Length: 519
Image (cartoon, rainbow, N blue to C red; front, side, top):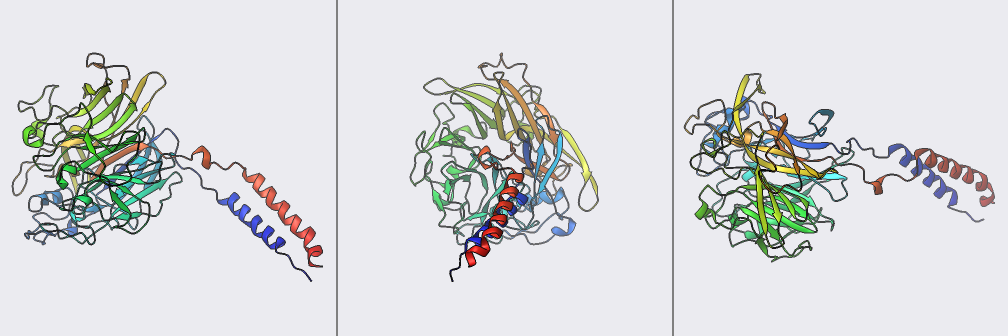
């Protein structure tokens, strides 16, 4: 007697089709809306106690307890001071209105460092189905992980003795789900800042390292998954020091990788915009040339002192128009007031710069600042996690992460996260209703519409930023992107009723021919 597996296969296939019909992933975001990454401080007074030893060498003790915002004045005894906190993604309409869609990332997945102002940038994947971001595979309220060594990569002269911690890449999908993380050993002793998934399937990342191992700093290519230490490739470097490759922002345009450096490092460092590798070809191996984009700043920090540019975010409107955000110095005494630079001229670049390519080099057309209210104090009032009310005072400086779109009417709309200027009086204790670390200031989300064909400040004189959102008391805003959505190629081509009908036919076929096949 012959037997057959046809009925079994048919039944299995039918059940699979029914399962597919019933559990198809659904997009939770609305295409065209924007997504903002943020973090809210989770600590209380008991998170840090006065006199508690901090994880730093030479040893130092906490001067403030764990209550927001005073806890971040522990930057005074510990320049590395930071505390991990939960990550939130919020969908907003293009006008900044709430949509009610909020994703609170489980602390068991990833957390950020609350006061690390350069972290938690978000970037859409090439197919628009997800956003990628960097964080730490750690729970909230861990001290100084943002300057910890990565496992197996401790280094001579490391002043941070917090537990060794990987940096990790997360991915938030169009259905609100989170993909498995990718852990890396890069950026030991400092921050991982931005990550983008490229069309070649690799993650491209930027960050800084305090290690003398240059391969742990700058721009990296990461294979998703894999074992930390073997899944990354150091793409190349500018100069011979890790501090010269303290990169913050990045973008990929026309299959070319661009990165920015805006602060920190040796006097030989250059705060400017760089190209990594050859134009039109994404780098994949080592020893790629890292070169300053022609026309951008080439003056070293040693010459500039603090008066040079501090570029952060990048967005190409087209092949000849590039917008660059500059975050400024973060020092209240440096910021522009009433449209005029301060007497020391240290903050002349802060805002949104528009650059045009003239066929030979990039030329700065103008810098947009109207509506940012640079240097003008604003207050945010609320309760901390101990139930104590407070007021936080800060002032806008420049801009950090940005994203944009080209409109049908010949304009572009750009969304940006502001930086802040810290006004705390340095001392022990620090004075004022603000923290010594401007990274924990409640900052803002803004947008501006610029006419693409404009090339002069006079043409753009009427353009002004609009305030969309101010962070709450105890909250910071970090990244901005358009929301992920279901790509057309991922949309089921067979409707649910058709799948169920096919399943029913397969059941009927199995029932009709099963007796004959068994005879």
